[in-house]
Length: 100
Length: 177
Image (tube, rainbow over all chains, first blue to last red; front, side, top):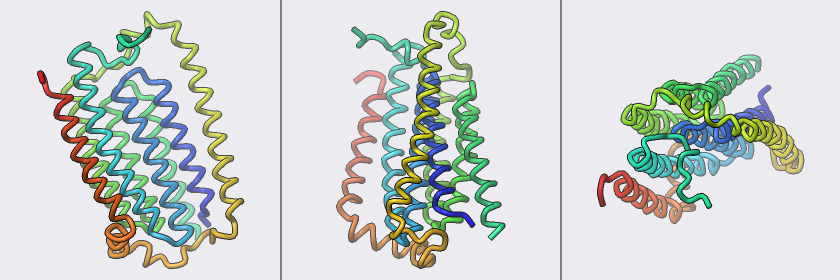
């Protein structure tokens, strides 16, 4: 029997995986991918909760999260392209102009 | 319900493995392609959760649109090799990295604890396994009605968000303003 706990634990593992990616990777594109992993973990939790309480709201919220993720990816990748054009690198440690 | 559990572990395992490989892989191109595998496994899980609409938009929008955008940027920037040229000069960065990884593990444990605690706290509300009305939840018509009645304002704001993001992306990526 698959219960809500199964999906919640899976969601937590996926979210932590994404967090590890944001911390460990030194590549802006891979960091954005890790953020997508985290968003998907949250989507899974929303849909599991929605299904458990018998409401379609979880799917509606997942729809909004996907929309926001699309907007975030578009802007984020545009930023990556602009940064790469100026610095010729994708390593976030190289972008230190604003560091005091 | 052996098959249900089997499907959950199969697709959950695929999702976790693919996500780990996304995070640990050195090649951004492989990361993007593996993330599509992870999304497909999650879409299968959405189907087991009686949410076919969510599964379909997961495939069409995430795997079809967003990941293609990522793939396009990876190829455009020719970023096939990662941070080898940095790790040599940045050995001092190793310690914060390990600290970050440790913090992430702590976060995972904390999330599991918090989520399970939430479950117990609202035990009266949750019904556990079977959804009360699986057909009504999975019905696209119900979702459409919700989107255009209860969530109509949020839905319209979303369109503004998309326009702002589109204009922002064009402005940012343009060569000279």
